[in-house]
Length: 363
Ligand SMILES: Cc1cc2nc3c(=O)[nH]c(=O)nc-3n(C[C@H](O)[C@H](O)[C@H](O)COP(=O)(O)O)c2cc1C
Image (cartoon, rainbow, N blue to C red; front, side, top):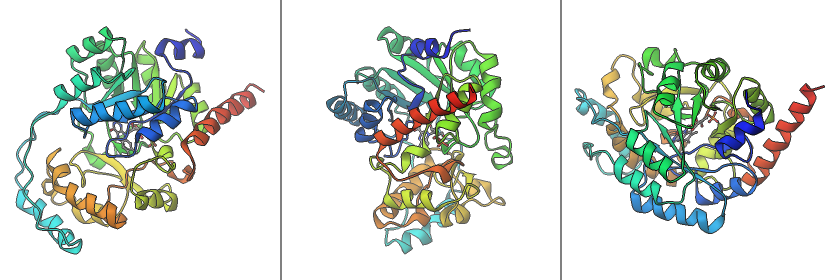
């Protein structure tokens, strides 16, 4: 078995700290650069970016840091199935539109999948890492990335998904536990079964994935400090991918109301919901989530990405107006450990904290 340092080197990482890609604006170029310069690996969640925006963000990062960074995409998403309760779904946002002074919601339309064009931009971006969530990276994207020396990572929420990712040739598997903030990366089985009650936690998932695959494992979900990082390494992970802890840094691009909600919330105040995008994701429970997610009318939430398109105008205006009750307040269960601080200081602390725990455990 390779040593931890060998596994890191094999993956091209300088330390075990990876800042999670966070599509939707959290992962600014300033955040990615600050993480890199402090010894971590910064990532851009580019799923909602156009090819031109991907190129621009990459340029902005390269202007700030010469160190490697990553870009993440959603795997190609099939066209959404039927939406039998379109009228009801629209009715559920109507009152909120009125409350925020927005015109009536428009019926969301599917505009096709952007993966191929986004992937072309990624290949030209100068990124050193390419990661995927919501599915397997297409074989041609894996081959194209590898031909350019770009390392390929895939997200798994079960052992079966991890094995499937290894088969398509990823360089490492990100094992995303149920504690994780944001969208579930699940792509086999039904991640919404029992409204998320069957999610596997990071503590249970990481060693089972590490036993099942030969490639390095990156633990993700609920990891907030050096204790969590050292624990993940003890479970067999080579590195960790952390999202929530970076959301309250000065460089994170989310609305101030979202940062304040994370800093005020308790560990038992998040839930898995489809209310904002149509795909299961973990966020802090708020008024919108409770009003829209109705166990008696599951089809009143549209399939992804239609629900995402439907709720976007409302979320955009709510962000500017500081109305947290209408925002997708993505956050993981470790949120009580989040602090407001510069990202570089955070990464330095994470690295110091991990070493301190390792020394203490070594006696
Ligand atoms: C605001 C937010 C946005 C996210 N967006 C993405 C994304 O675009 N792509 C992705 O692979 N993971 C995304 N994630 C999930 C992270 O990669 C990671 O699994 C998660 O943040 C880990 O849990 P933690 O938040 O408890 O650290 C997102 C997470 C958050 C909190």
